[in-house]
Length: 305
Image (cartoon, rainbow, N blue to C red; front, top):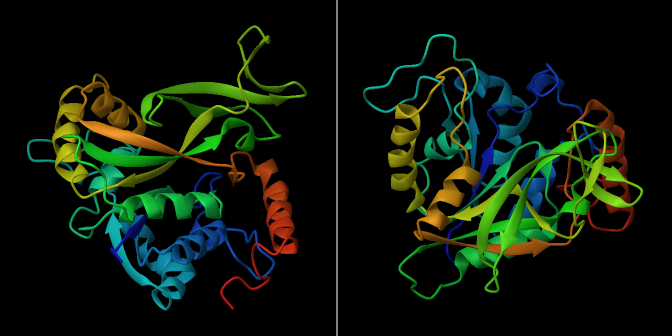
C-alpha cells in the first residue's frame, strides 16, 4: 500500500472568535474536538501519516492539546506557516498581519511530504466518505495525460449551509469526465425555505442549486505541486497591488492550472454533511450533529477507544 499523508492546515485553529487553542471547546461527548474526528476518519480510510501546519508561537499549546495525543496513534510531523517565510528578494511588508493563504500553508510542508497527500482545514468536519474517496484516488495509478492528476472532495451545496447566516462557497463546474473546469467563489449563500439562494445587496434572493458540488478545501495532491507553488508564490508576491492584503489561495491556483491545461482535478462527490463553526451560534448544532452520528453508530462515545 502506498504511503499517504494527511496535511492539516491548523495555523489559525481556535482563532476564529478571538479565542485560542486552549479555548477550543469540545464537540464530542468525551472531550473530542473536530480535528479528532477528521484524523480518526483519515486513519480508518488508510492514511498513515499526518502533518500539522501551525504557527511557531502555537507549537507548545498545539502539542499539548492535540499533537501529543496524535503522536501515539500515527506518524506525526509539524510544519510552520510564518509571515516572514518568503522567497529570496521578498521581505514581510510593514503592516501585514494577515497570513499569506492556503497556497503558502501547503508550501511550508514541502520538506516533510514526499508522497501523495490530502489537505484539509483543521476546524471543519468532512465525514468519512470523502476521506475514503480521496485516499483511494491517491493510491490508484492514473493514465498518463501529460498533466498533473489531482482530486478534490466535492460536497453538495445544501449539505454545507449554516442556519445562522450567509456563507461563501466555491461553486464548482464539472465536465463529463468529472474534471473540475471552474471554481466560482460565491458570497452570502443562505438557507431559505425554498433551498439555497444568494442574498443580494437589495435583500432579494437568487436561487442556487442545492445539489451543485462545492469545494470545502479538501484536496488530493502530489509532491509535484511543490515546485508549481514555489514559482507561483513568487509571481503572486511580485504582482501584489496592496502587500498588506491579498492571499495565495489553492482554489485560485487550481483554477489557473486547469485553464493552462497543466492539471486535471477530478471531483469526488461526497453525500456526507460538512459542518464547521462559521458563526458562534453554529456550535450547538455541531454538538447535536455529533451526538446524532454517535447514536447512529458512526462513531463510538469515546472516539479512540
